Image 1 (cartoon, rainbow, N blue to C red):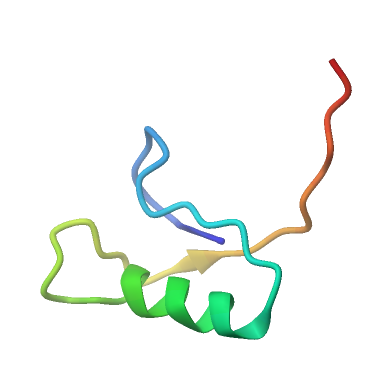
Image 2: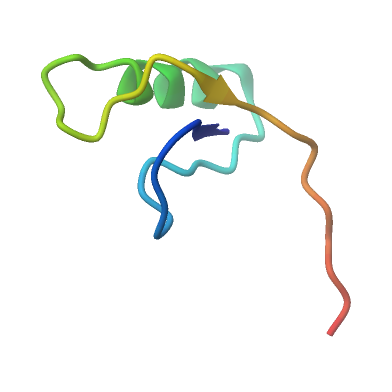
Length: 50
């Protein structure tokens, strides 16, 4: 889960449970935080082989 705008890993969350999703959305949509955004993006985690 991450915010739509921005970079450098700010407000990027790996969520395994519903409670983590809710917590990350609360942080992304927190208007009192200068890192907030009005759009969140979610995608399935992809394990990359090195």
